[in-house]
Image (cartoon, rainbow, N blue to C red; front, top):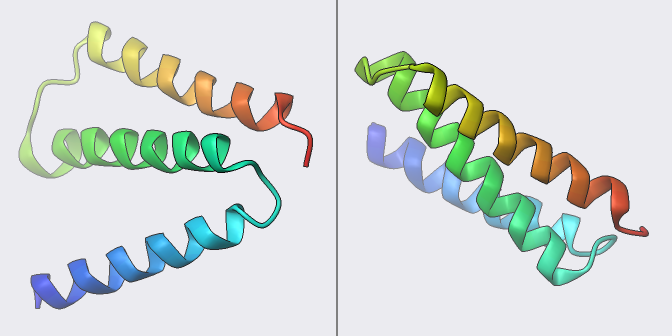
Amino acid sequence: MPSVFTLAALAASVVLLGIAMKSLPAGTSYAIWVGVGAVGTAVSGIVHFGEPANMGRLVSLGLIVTGIVGLKLTTAA
């Protein structure tokens, strides 16, 4: 079952990237896609696998999110 969920999530991810690329430049779309994946993976590790949630990690994740928001806000759609 985990493999089925993973394949469905991968397919949905690529479809959503394609939708985003209709209104955003490829570089911005890809950077946001990668950033969301990186933050999601790190948060999942903290929540599900007990990885440390120290201040350095949380600040770094916040910087990634800030960068994602900045890219979206400064890119003409």
